[in-house]
Image (cartoon, rainbow, N blue to C red):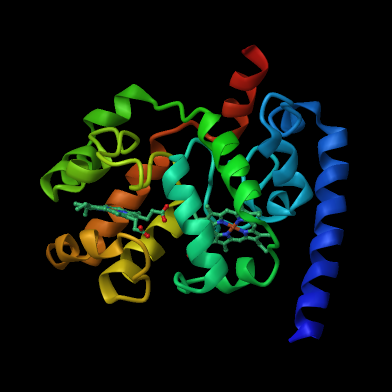
Length: 222
Ligand code: HEC
Ligand code: HEC
């Protein structure tokens, strides 16, 4: 076990230095993690989150890894703790569990910084077939019509999320592989949602924000 953790740490350190090199080359991408207003921005880099979730927390290095930018603070804290202590064990959670060492205050700070990042929605996408299906299946009652105004702050924002990730989570919540936190609140709804519906909805969710390049441009304009 120690050996596994050690090799994970080495991989992480090298990923980290690649990420640092990239951010040195691109002032654009490092803009948000260099924000000194939030101690969480630096912690996010120091604790290696950047290696998997990207230097703007919005461009993960694998399409099946989640975007974190803009997420509700309470939801983020709950998920990091659930993944850390094994209550959430679905999908690729183990990859993260093996690599993170963060304490309570650090989690709180990182989550606060993540929540401060914007999720900019393309308004036209709220009038599409995907939007209609999202309402017809009552997803909006908890996640909001725009998929980013959750009814409770412990419920996640979904707008802009990678479609591969969203689809996997819906399936895992439906079949019980993901049963941590408040997943039970959602599971019942999914009996009436088939795989084709889930595909349409996850594609719609991803389409709600512009591709990452332009969201980085928005940051420059700020
Ligand atoms: C080695 C890669 C890796 C590292 C390092 C990593 N994560 Fe993750 N993280 C993941 C993966 C993979 C998932 C999704 C697990 C799944 O498949 O369900 C995840 C999920 C999450 C989630 C849940 C997202 C959601 O929408 O439910 C949060 C929050 C999160 N990570 C935050 C962090 C933070 C903060 C750090 C640094 C302390 C970190 N991660 C480090 C890979 C990583
Ligand atoms: C009764 C409230 C409720 C309803 C209705 C609901 N959800 Fe959820 N959803 C949740 C909660 C709570 C979670 C987070 C579970 C946890 O705490 O780990 C979640 C998680 C998710 C996730 C994973 C997000 C992430 O970042 O990992 C996706 C995707 C999702 N919901 C999509 C949907 C879709 C699509 C529908 C409609 C078919 C729907 N939800 C209906 C409450 C709900």
